[in-house]
Length: 460
Image (cartoon, rainbow, N blue to C red):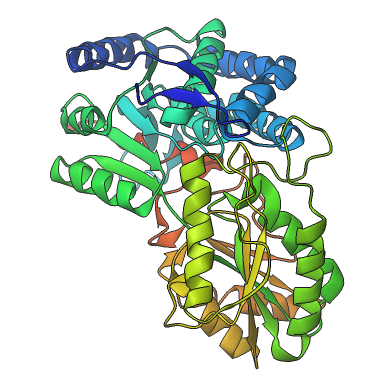
């Protein structure tokens, strides 16, 4: 059976299989991408921006169709899928609107010359390795800024997202981007490693697991290639003693259940003052138990299946292991009988440092709630993991909450919100959550040559 397969996680039915790249195709793909770069890099920025606008328009026009594709592929509820389509289109539109200005030369103080300026130029063919949890958004974060900058793209999507990968390539090409400036490949991990090692490839961007990130970083480092990695997360959500407990718990529950908990920056660890833990847990349990876990194409559904039976069983096993090691399970955590990759959302307390659930990422609809005696304890607990993607602090005294948020060892710190992602805001983490940034002007700056040009008059 091929690796690239659409298997509907709602029914377990195999919908479609896709032909994969052969080893003999790899050199041809890289030759095409390299040849296309020679002309794509000289395409005026205004013309590339016009194409980005056409891509954004297509996402808007085909919103329902695109949403249905990923609901079928990986189980995202339709309303969430439509929101993702909107966000992806907004990213392309942001780079259409702002990209040309970001590529303009920056004039510096001449410092003894007639002219000193910095030029922003593309570097060449790039490889992108994308995950299944946000099929359109993750691709847009990588493709939007780099096509706008004049780089060419070889895009490997997750094997379960081949259908959305095909439709994205269709949209990009219909917008006017040359066929070889954006090449969608159904490649193996070994073929991607060969591409990274090839001298024609100038960089690699991966969003995925720690293991995948370590492998890509090793190959990229050995071949002196730039890499941007967005990996896992175990985000903390800290509730202060002056916070609106009920409202915050409702927001936290909704955020944790979004995309069936399959988000790197989901609030996985909820940290609450000891005296308020019971009330907080009661609200989370109520919200989790009232969620409608069902077919993602049903408008009444709030939580769809996980992306696959394997993914579901992994999360269920993590919950069971936490309980076996001494944690308290307040609700859910079991697989739902019948077809599909469904599980009941779970709430855990009593997780201690000697348990696996303390440090691992649980990539599913599971909330782990901790009680602490002080804000210092909350910050220590929040930082006591190997990840550092994002975190949030919730409280009425905003200045105090900001001070606490500034102590979080993360790439993105939020006050009274969690996980906000917008086209103009930088996205990325620290520690084992990866390195590099996507989106905004920061995303435009990762795979470019920031080149100094200095001009002086020859003195006679």
